[in-house]
Length: 381
Image 1 (cartoon, rainbow, N blue to C red):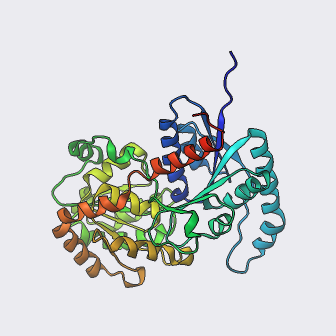
Image 2: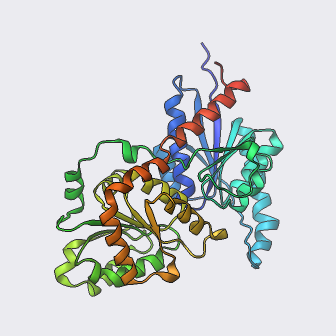
Image 3: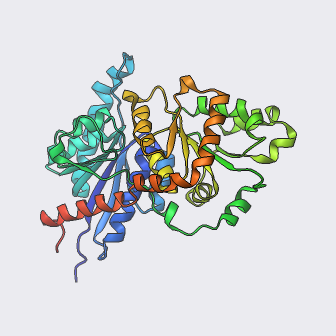
């Protein structure tokens, strides 16, 4: 008996974890719903060692293309990208999609997604897209013009055709929150004293430097009242580690726990044991924080495209589950006062945060993909 051919679904997007993690979440739901093991998941995008390791762990096949970028400011690199990198990436994408016989392309936006979605258009392959932020990126704005369906994270999102738009929330890895994690396990994992409330500081991959510097300079005051788990980012870890040893009072060092990054198992424990979360306000960060049910202080990246991080933060703040502090207004006294306010309101925040989180976003998107492919005859009923 001949083995049935696999149905190939291709994801594209990249540049930050905010693009990568939702792809993983949707892919996991597709596999969970694929009872007959008919699907084969692929990813096409620029070379990203960290992202590819994550994809391989979830059995997502990866294909590297050259990625160009159209900058919104003058740069000689635009000439190279527009006339060389982007056309070459488009050609690569065209032949990869043709070779693997893709039935649907799903764009998450970001670097490299535009050429893949454009190649899909030329080949007559349907394109879906998801926009994480309240202000769409340039790639997704372009792709939305021929996308069959557009999924959005925030109820108020600029630009898109409402007839094609479906509000679902941002896909997150449900495993971070649905598995049972004992608080005691987290305490042991991070070597916490548990004498004070725990602050989880997520530096993030973009713009982490300024946030890390602020936390670093405020450590001695913060550590008198709080225990801190600080994810500084892989590029910042060594520097922050050295500086903190000089800056932190020796009597307070046992309350400070520094990490460069965390794998999924460690991260779910960090969410579980924290009392307050401090973070930038990329969409993926906000939705994971909301799913944790914990109060948060959001500090938007001032240089985010279209000021989308501020707009994301203020939409979430309306739920009452978070406080937004613009980086220009950030001071030690204000920061500590807002932490105290959130500690007092912790229990009342949980319901609002969880309502915003939309834990079923990845499942809804996966079902839309499968229903579309079934209607089009790619999948038999």
